[in-house]
Length: 498
Image (cartoon, rainbow, N blue to C red; front, side):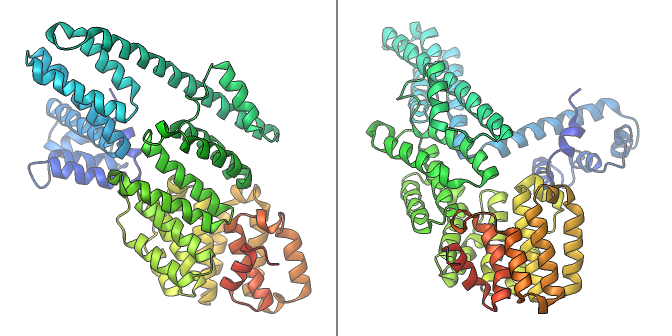
């Protein structure tokens, strides 16, 4: 028996709430038995053996198993719907056309069936979906004797060419798996990877041509591997030349411009984000503009990227020195109905930092009043770095509001909950210790001893190579030492002015 209870318990709180609404909508009554069963499953204190009696008032195992199956079927349907993003929805449409076309042909409705299969072929070509094309061509060959108008040799040629593409795609998947494994091994050994050399060797091993190895989809696959490495090392400056060189090469090939549009858009966002991390804010905005231009003619993807674009544009604007305009942009992001809850959470933390720079602490506390999930949930959903930024901005806000008892409580909780993480990030621990001194003994902050020991302890990289979020937090204490405004000091540090 498939463990329905385990699957439900492993859904996030947000997904569990969505599924409950999904179940309620599918029920004929206001409170269906499926909804009752679902609520019982969520209550971990109740044993599954008790479910039939609680639902029916007696042991009715036959009815219970039928009910359980209906709930399981709806859960699978819900998960499938949730997991289909816009890119996958298009592939789902192709699958539906294939199934419909095959059914019509088998039902002897030949003309309509073949029309639908040819429509599926058009869409599969648009999406570069070689697996669907393989299925379509096989069906057209299988039923070719029912369609005297079709050219059998032409379809066979299409199938053979598509098989070559499928093999190339399979080779690329193997190549990128090897590249990813090599990156992990190098990182564990402390070796700086030479991506061009690694790619040359791997592409040669799997017989990957220059053409198949260079398009928006393959480049996006590559940058995901590079991004994973850069997120660990924070060495984003090593990423930029490689990505830009390949991106510019692909955009010069006219046949590639209308292929893999979704991956092209995602690449532009990746480049823009890396430019932001590299503090090249104007260039980051330039790539956001390219994204918006591409999205204007591919409107089905707009909802996916709307909030992402606004958040990154707000960050660029904030660090270019126009905090007032940045607030307007982030307000738009917070007011938009994000396609992803992760995007909305990003907008909230970025918004809290922008409002903090403007000393709009009421706005910050308003945002944090909506962030009520546990740290464990946020780590699972957003990652530990997001959580660290969120908690630290909240602590800084309450220092400014002089809620020092609350600050002490939050800081102690922060230190206790994240002991393991802080063991591996001594710099963050050092910062928190100096932060504690800054509000408990403010008279010490502007002493030479505090300044010299603080900077010798936490300044590990040249300013222009430093992570922008780390700089923003360093700027808070530096402003206190110099008696200056946090936002002004942040801009000076980001621009490399010591």
